[in-house]
Image (tube, rainbow over all chains, first blue to last red; front, side, top):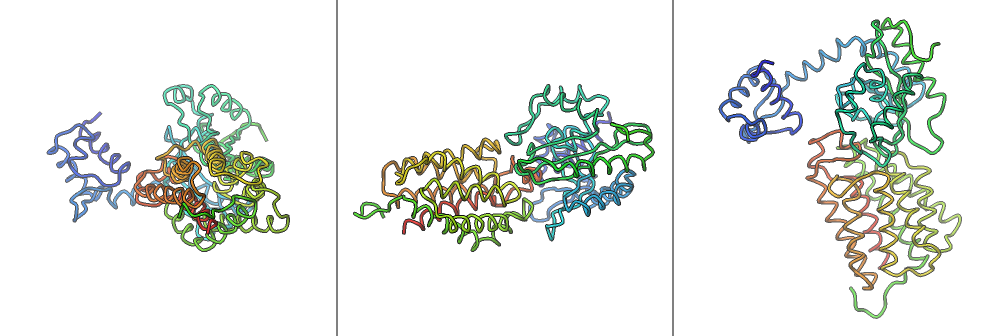
Length: 250
Length: 214
């Protein structure tokens, strides 16, 4: 690992986590001399990856990162090919749809359409959600080649009274998802919200992402027609990406 | 406030009036609740609570409640049935737990009310797993219930005022917090500097209790 590059990235991650930090804050967080941090910040600022608040003198993330993020979104093959499918799933169900990729222990949302009933939905693109508590994350994790190591290395945090925090219980759900291709979550991340997700595979047969329908939680559970719609969407996107097979067959 | 000869009876009329005042207050503060929720949630708390409280008041007027528990049971059932998002399940479960704890009492004492509201916040914590400091409605509920418990057998007015004051302080204390539960937790540090909408509607519940004593 190149030490200076690693340090620069740690600065960016610290600013992502905290918003605004001064040179001293960053130096103590990273265990580095203030002079070293200052030099790194100057370099990052020269490329607009960070910027300095003129009043406080503290640092925050810079606009070049938005440009990079947009390039990421618009060149992401899975995302670009999924746009039409996501829009259609949202229109036919009237529900919110999320597209996500695994950045363990989180899922990062790379595309989102809000529910039809909300006039001005809040975009979730770029948000991280704990993978073990979301249907998206479970679908992605189930087909991950190193899933046992991932699950064992990370403690499963409790987000609601229903979050699955026992690794054995999670593994059992993941086994079921491998068979069906479809993952469920009932108020495990946020009270009142359930979701169903389908894994998306690429040409190599690897899981490339997942698509989820966000359903208001109620006692009757998720409508089977929604589950079928998610399965069709995930299978359709997978086929478009060149995947030969999808779990559960046709 | 306390020490006067005449105090309020916590009977079914009182509870019905309390719920009605809460509904009015939610209506008056609907835009404010939605504005707060737009900053750190999905911008539907005001409209959801308004829909739920209207449904609750309609149900209570079509079938008049027979005891204090009935008021909370009917309101809780309607909230669960018609309110989307987190607010319906959380307030609905809390109100049902309050109803269960009140059982069939016709006249409720302050300690009994405190005990019932404690059962309510316990239900919220079972569902949401939120602890104090997580920037949720729990941050207003717990201080309010604790104040009510501390009031002992004081006058209803004094006890209600203490509970509402504690709820308000708890609500304001959520502003600098970083959310650790609920949708707002996805925002990390960006949730700081915003008052929690659930803690705000919880303050309205306890402020309505004060209004009902006058």
